[in-house]
Length: 69
Image (cartoon, rainbow, N blue to C red; front, side):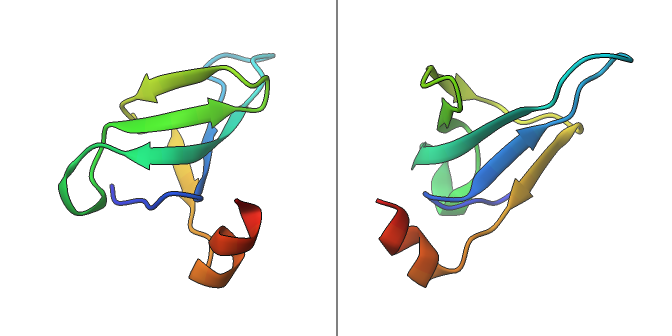
């Protein structure tokens, strides 16, 4: 998985009734966009995150990333 600062992360719920978690990558700690990532979740909590197979990254165009900051 490769990502950039400003990309959106969604972690799918694993069980029926679990809600998806959504966040924004604020730092990339791996080389060339590799994990781990520092993610700011929608509840404003930040955590170091290692994505799993239930993670989807929505890549934002560079122009949108610059405006989001």
